[in-house]
Image (cartoon, rainbow, N blue to C red):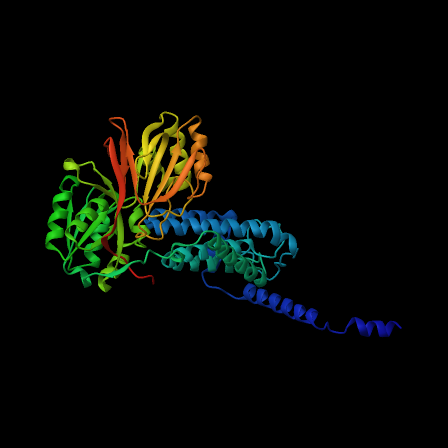
Length: 506
C-alpha cells in the first residue's frame, strides 16, 4: 500500500500543471543565469537606477525634464501622457496585481552582495511594479512623441532588467509588469486620444505652389511672439532658399504687405494674434499662407495639425494645402468701417479678461484648471453685459459672456477646445446669461453640452449673429487681441477665404 502511494507521489504532473512547472523551472534558471553572470560596469549603475525608480521618482523627474527641455507642446503632452500612464499602471499593480498572485520574492543566495538593494522590498513579487511603471511611462511618451520615446525606452528597459539583476524579481515578474504597463498606456490613449489619432482638418483640399527648400517664400517673424526668434532660426536652417524677415510688432503690418506682394507665398512665425494679421493680408492678396507656430498656445496652427517647423516644411515641399473659413465682424476695430477677422474666437463680456488670465496660467497648470481659475478671478469683480443679440434683430439680454468660434469646437462648455473642421461655414456661439451667482452659472455652462439650452447657458450653431445696444467702452476680444466694440455690429463668416499649407498625415 505504501509503495503504491509512493509511486503515485512521484508521477510528473500532466497537462497545465506540467506546463506551469516547466515555465517555473525556466524562470528560476534564467534568474540564476542573470545572477551568476558577470555584467561589466553594471554593478555601479543598475542598483542605483533601480533605487532611483522607487515610487516613480525617476519618471516624474524625467517628465519634468522632457517638458522643460523639449520646449514644445508635443513634448509637454508626451510628458503628461507618460505620467498618466505610469499612474494607472501603478494603481493597477498595487490594487489588483500584487493581491491576486502572492508570489514570494527570489532567494538571494546566488546574487552577489554588491548587486543587492540596501532595502529589500517587502511586497509580493508578481508582477514587478517598477517594470510596469517603466513600460507605462516609456510607452505613453512614445505614443505622443516617437523621438522622446526613443530616448526614454533604453532607460525603461534598464530599470526593468535591474529588477532581475538586483534579485528583486524573477524574469516572469518583469515581463508581466511590462505587459501591464504597456496595456495601461494604451488604456490611457483609449480615454484621451493622442494628437495623431485626431485627424487634421482635410476639407476642402486644395493645391498651392510647391516650394522646395522655401524657394519663393517670404517668412515674416514677430520678434516679440513667444518662441518666434528660435523658430525663425529653425526656419532658416530648414528652408535655406526662403527669405526670413524678423521685425518688431509695429513693423509687422508693413513687412507682411511687402512679403505678400513679392513672394509666391506668405510665411508667418508668431502667435495667434500675429497669424491673424498675416491671414487677413494673405486673403486680401490671394496668396497661400504658411504658418510656423511661434507663440504660446498656437491654437490655429495646432488645429491644422501643425506643431513643428518640419510639419509646415513638408507641406511646402509637396504643395499640400486646405481652404479655411475666416470669422468676420462688421464693422471692425479699424477706421472706415472695414471688417475685423478672427481665425479662432471672438468674445464679449468677461471672456476677454478670462482669456487673458487663462492663457497666462495654461502653460503652467493646463487649460481646464486655468479656465476655472480665470473664471473665479474674473467673475468676482465683473457685472453682466447688456446687449441685443439674435440672428437678425435680437432681443435685449443680460449676459456674462458671449463666445463665437470660427468653426465648431469639440470640448464641452464655454471654453474652446479643438476643431476638426475649419471650413464648416458655422459659428460656434455660446452665451452665459446674466443673473445671480455668476460662478455657478459658468460652472453649469462648463458641464453642459456644446449644443444645449438652459436658463443659464445657450449654445448653438449659427451662420450669423447680430449685436446692438452695447454701452460705450465695451471691450471685445478676437484671437487674443482686445479692442473697443462698436455699439452695433454683425458676426458672420467669409467661407473658404484663406488657403493655408497643411501637411498630409504621416
